[in-house]
Amino acid sequence: MSVVNQLSTFQTLIKILSKEMDINQDRIMIYNGEWNIPPDDGIFIILERLPGRVIANRNTVKYDPSSAVYQEIQDLNIREQIVISVFSKNTEALERKDEVLMAIASLYSQQLQEKNSIKIFRIANIEDLSVLEGGSNLYRYDIPLTIFSWQQKVKTAEYFDTFNVEVKANDGLPLIEEDFKQPVTSLTEGE
Image 1 (cartoon, helix red, strand yellow):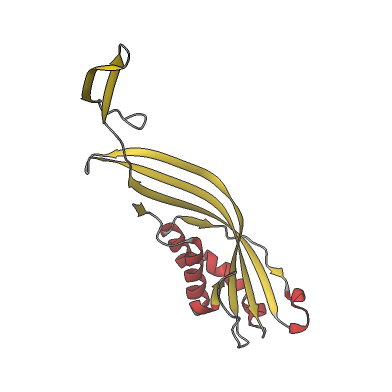
Image 2 (cartoon, helix red, strand yellow; image 1 turned 60 degrees about the vertical axis):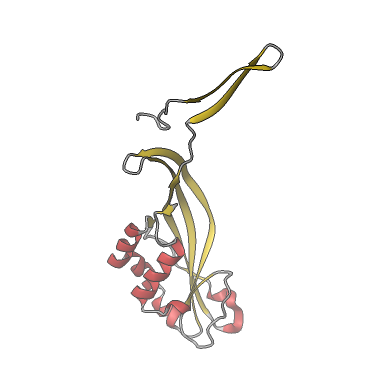
């Protein structure tokens, strides 16, 4: 079995934000993961997945003549909703929140998106949620993103071309017992 995509959506986003914003990957966390808010005043980022929508779900079978086996190919297209939250106790989140969208639009980001079969929409709102933090003076900005992703898994498809058949007649007495090989038919249309 092989999975075509190398990095998940989260892993891709972490690499993009880390490189383009020059932030250590340990300061970029996944929501509800096991992590502690950094004790210093600097910037940190949280990635949160909201409910998404499956756009397409396909399952096809294809014959591979080079290996003489059938392959099951499973494809899934999803519209994902990811919120990037940028926090800091100092003004760094306030001053650098725009860099998130610039990182998403960068050449490095485009190359990584293509390599990992995702498309991150570059237009998004930057929501100031600092007021929710009350008197803690924590600067907080949420940037909701829409991402289309494609995932594919390829594995060997089991098929059967030999069947044991027993034909009974006359009160169930076996009259004919024959093994036969059924002609292999194409499992996909057009082959």
